[in-house]
Image (cartoon, rainbow, N blue to C red):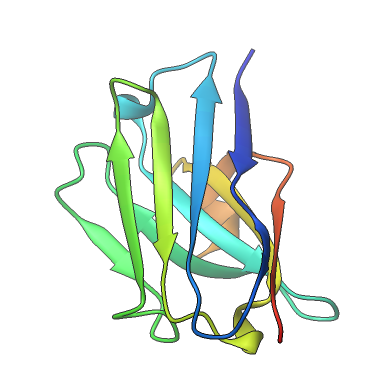
Length: 123
């Protein structure tokens, strides 16, 4: 059974950092590109970052470039999202998903999704 579980979310002050983890089971992450998406209340789900199966290509949304870093440890079947210099507008539920085909920044290109982890940036 394919399963993705996100963790590492929480409440952080503006300028702070969090590291999200996406632990996979039921398949080998080295077979898939993995993406991180986020959805804030009243807004559409948006792509944040994606990493290829061999970690030789990455994608970042313009809004997070220079602040977020995606990485993966295929031996641990886990993908990470290091988030630095967090802003209130980063507040959202963050999801990871496996890329099936199509544009990396499009949610319909992904098939399996985790349940999400809440990130709140507030003073």
